[in-house]
Length: 409
Image 1 (tube, rainbow, N blue to C red):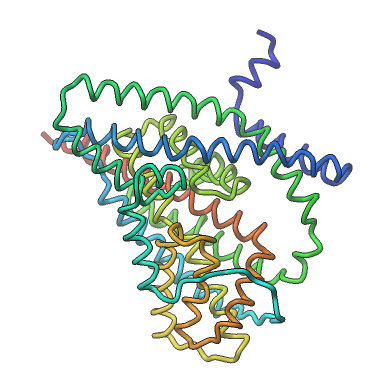
Image 2 (spheres, rainbow, N blue to C red):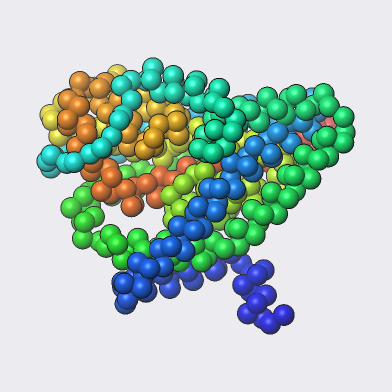
């Protein structure tokens, strides 16, 4: 095998992705027509990941639960607390940044085709119905709430079966994991197509109009990623969190940024968790769970866009109202995966807290779609990298606690 073949098949995936980013950008600048044509490579890659992710989640979660023993620590409760804390803290960060740099928008009538939820009750209702969705339908439509529900129920039921049945499921988990590994190796080709098409299709001119809004959104997300999340991780593991933070951002955040899909990035996070030596019984559940409910980036988007709408129409935002907005953004962001269109479609719900007219809220959503090429990418990168970050932090903390107890005994 030649040196080039070895590098392609077994070399550093991050190095290959960086090279793909550079080549894709150059192609979009030098030959836009060809760059548009390469978009099919990105679409094929993302579609492949989205196709394999639901089956991966169903089998791995069911397998992990079926083999779990009561004396095995899974840390799910601890990770769930980190997810909720991180999302709420992200909303508070967005409020602070929005007060420091208030934004007013030039609202004009924008054509939007949306069906936003009328309130938090509708979001919770959607989540409840997604939980009891037909399992086949849940797999076909990538309804991860339903997939997780049936995987957990199936795994609990399988704990009462004989070893042969569990071995078949374990073999299935091995097969689907191997397929995912092969698909992930194609990431540089897919990202090359994604970045080339995005730059050639959108350019940078349309984004210049909303530079300040984009800057505030990115600033809030960077603070969450580089200050807030490390602080939460430090409180958990009691040592320098940045090596772990940068590992998760570089190996999970980058791919999620360009794929713009937390669901599609589940296999990437699963692969990274395995390389980090985390417990499979932990990450096989927490990673798909995080892709469903851990939405710090979505909380930032909902909060910043809603406060921008409030500032634009001249509404004074009080501390109590801002706190309620944080709670609403946290709950809404957690339910974003159950609402078609994601976090942007929850903006009208948050705007209702201030009595903002639906037509104004719809225009803000329209602006969100315009800047989505950056906003949604950064949001997904933050969300997905935080899934693996908090999972790793909880796993490391639990292992160190166990080791200390063994030493004392």
